[in-house]
Length: 172
Image 1 (tube, rainbow, N blue to C red):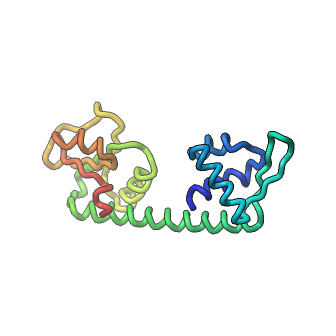
Image 2: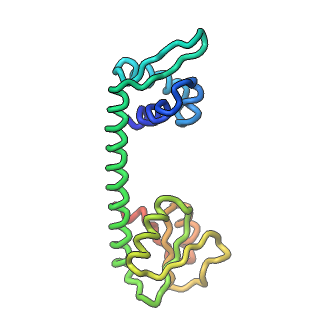
C-alpha cells in the first residue's frame, strides 16, 4: 500500500508522465511501477487515456483520490505514533542515565527526523545539550560524559572512548 501511495501522490500532480519518470521519482523499479499501475487500473484507482501512440495520461479516479486520502491519513497516524514513541524513549533514556542539571549531554549523528524529535524532547525537559557534527568537537573523555547517537556506525565509532548510548536501541 505504501508503494501505491507514492504513485498516487505523484500522479495527482503529474498526469502526463511515463512509467520511467514515476520509477525515478518514487525510487521504485520500472517493473514494480508497471505492475502497480496495472493493479491500480484493475482496482479502479486510476484510468489511462492514450494521447498518441507513445504517450499515456494517468488520471486518478474519485475512488483513487479517496484511497489516496485514506493512505495519507494512515501514514500520518503511523508517523505520529512513531514520533510519540520516540519522544517517550528519550524521556526514559534521560531517567535511566540520570544526568544532573549542571551536566551536558552531547548529541552526535545526522540532522534528520530523529534529531528533530530528540532536540524537541531535550528542550522540553530543559536538559543542557550540545549537538556535535564532527569528531573535532568531541569533548574530552570522561566516565560522566554521555553522548547520545542514533546511528549504529556512530555508536561503534564512539563506544571505545565514550559512554555512547544509541537512542534507537531504547525503542525496544
